[in-house]
Length: 364
Image (cartoon, rainbow, N blue to C red; front, side):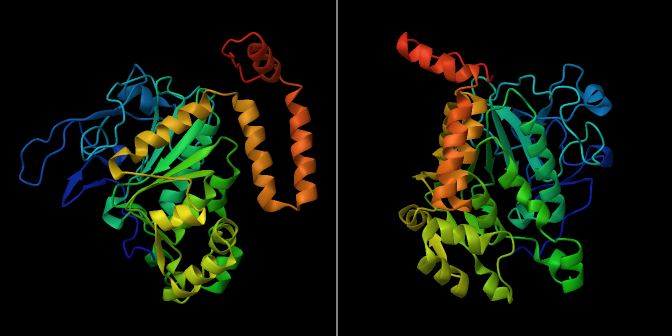
């Protein structure tokens, strides 16, 4: 399943039935206050925005902090439980390659911030509500940049990717690919850039509410852990469009749920519920819709409290189970296990255990 809405150009911010115009130089970031569809000022809610370093970022906010008014992103029934506190969320200077994006420019299709008690969790929200977060090329390029920024931020130990309560991501953008030819797809390695999600070394949790269909389901499966809201739906309906999954759907889904269920989903386009996905092993836990993101962030904080260096080794070892034979996988595990003995964190962890105290990991 995909959306028939193409990526909009700069300067337009969508908020449900209303559209707010903003200066093109700052597209994607609404003004300090939004308005309801009746024209009355809406309640302001402020969250921390993760900015790329640059002159524009400094000009907009000398303290290095960005306040973004985004109704529905924080607290309350419509919100996500993200802290209202505004904190310093700058990335270290020179820590990220902007990949062609103007330094300091905001994202158009994402809301990115650092959260958690120690700001150790990178939170990425897909923010293309008018198209149910359909994965257009612009959104996926911004996701690549955001992941690169968080990967290079030494404060961040884990990442959460989420969407809205209605849709994690309803698929790829069909209008973008409708008229593509075989030659275009082959010569440009179409969708190859989506693999960035699966190559990030820091653990990634997908917090899935609503639709995770087609490319949205594939994106969730690229993550290391999937938490689902109780109303989430998963599916690979590409067969209904006369094509097949192209970003790992036939491979990761089969490894997660087994051949029979994967075949049924891919060949019929049928969806499965969050409960069915948990039973099949596609997701690890299911939560009430309004508690999903808090649970995902709590898990990410717990992961981030451990050694980031050793967590990357553990992730690599588990992934080897899906990509190699058992013999090769166990050799990889032994190699990485031995490698932990060259780290200060392994020594600190075992010493703290013997001394009956909490370990103080330094990621070294």
